Length: 191
Image 1: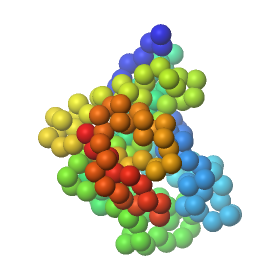
Image 2 (image 1 turned 120 degrees about the vertical axis):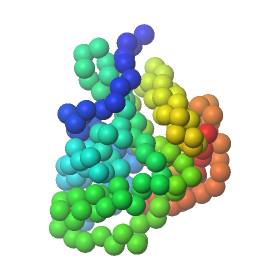
Image 3 (image 1 turned 45 degrees about the vertical axis):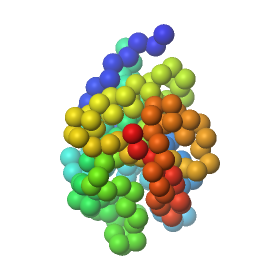
């Protein structure tokens, strides 16, 4: 059995947080954020910068990690109050413009959450630790925190990602509708 602890992320976890975002969203969708002159390393640099900020949806302050005995982050979960999406997203737009040298129209971005929920934005576990209950432990901790805030925990799942959907259903999530994310229609689930 893998021994680990669940704890709030530290600013030094920014590279692992960026890895998790790219793994969860998929490199293909992440590359859709930029033009052909930029690669996944540029996307990683942007997400790492966002993870280091205090005012970003991807901030280390919104992140819990599963830490292995050797100190590595084996799993990452990012969640935040959906009511904070608009102010947190401003940091994303700033970093996007800084890293890719182009403007982004905030009005063109679909809201993936709203004030009614705590939004589970990102969940990823490193490949060698998958299947060991780490994702379930992170979800349970996020659910506990959402309950303390008096709101359901919500997320979006790709309609074709049956493995993720099964994990979420086993954790207690139920479908409540659909929402767009990066112009892809996703299932919206809550618990």
